[in-house]
Image (tube, rainbow, N blue to C red; front, side, top):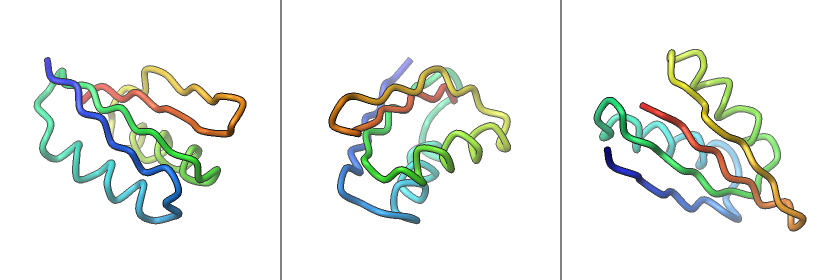
Length: 74
């Protein structure tokens, strides 16, 4: 299993979702993608898109600075 980190903090839509999709295409089944971001809409859109693709959203965290982390299993 490989873990890929994508840092899109400071980026707005559609960049976080586009970067997430790129990483998911390269990932092998069982790999984890971890996305770090700050854009509130992307925090909602990325899990919805992953669920629509049949992928498992393992965790969504947000810290006090409004930075979020989403862990997805390919």
